[in-house]
Figure 1 (tube, helix red, strand yellow):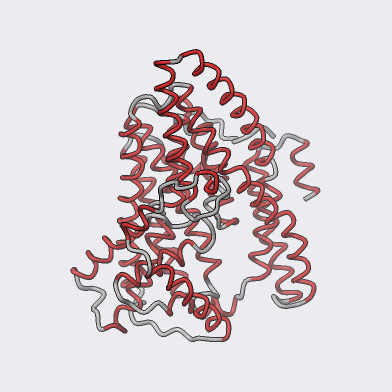
Figure 2 (cartoon, rainbow, N blue to C red):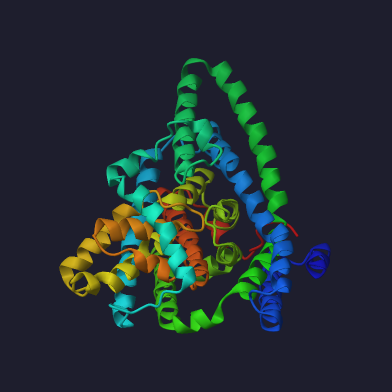
Length: 446
């Protein structure tokens, strides 16, 4: 960490510091793992102290998520950046998120079938038994809600409670609440312009302060990445990962192909996929190490605005909706793979066209309301498996490799939301091509 601070003092670029932190953390974690194991006193206490930096950094990001979403969307109205095309923007963002999730589900199905995961037998130890016991409670909550009820849950019944992040769908609720306030502002501006001017000045002041807080927190990113990846590599059960290597490889094969599809979509929009990778990597790296789409939200928004030239309104909409709607990794690939794996035990042929089409539709619709934090994939899988009347025990049997796969899934989720923002900006003419094409890639000043 002292070395990272020295790099910052020498004004080494943000991207280089993030990747240096990633490499150092991997090496440090592996050393701890092989010297002391995963269950030793030294490893446990080392991780506890590292959590001050790693988990502390994620908490700081989560702290600023709701204020950032709330004030940014209202600010987009007061700055006349969302007065036009708001319906079209919402439709495009949600449509692209859902469409790419359907493609991701198809890839998950194809990967599971290609690697012969249908009917795979998994062992159940103490950890898996405990996990399945926890899932029984989650299943009760899932089964008590229909899909229409889940959609209703997106609405802000108590916006002040949602501003505290009290529900998995709080972010979407805050987006809706902010949009309503923005639309009300436009009405006041037409009838009572003096009050509207005062309100706009207040919003602009709050926006300036919050963006400064975001910048201060983002400067801690290299330290957070170092601590988070050290924890993952030091505490992972490599033996269990080896036993489930086939499932891990199949999962990452689908994730990588879906990421390539994101690049293809960007290419079809006549934008450079190389520039996308170059500029998105630091944000995707943090998503990979933190396993939190919600924690990555500030980085996501800033990357879209400052690196890709996406307008402020679209960046906030796509990043925020991407937290709980149409997550390509957690709500697309993962549930589809699990459904294929357990279908034979229910007497279903997972390769039948009717099952595949039904599964893709269920996955796409069920992707509404998936939480943008660790565990979102579990929630999505429970919904999909329960709707299809398939056994849910498999969700708990994969606990040993869950963190490893969740890293790739989260990075793909964030890439999907950024892709939806870029494509929406391109379609609506609210993407600054000069910003997207320019060589400068640093997110914040060193």
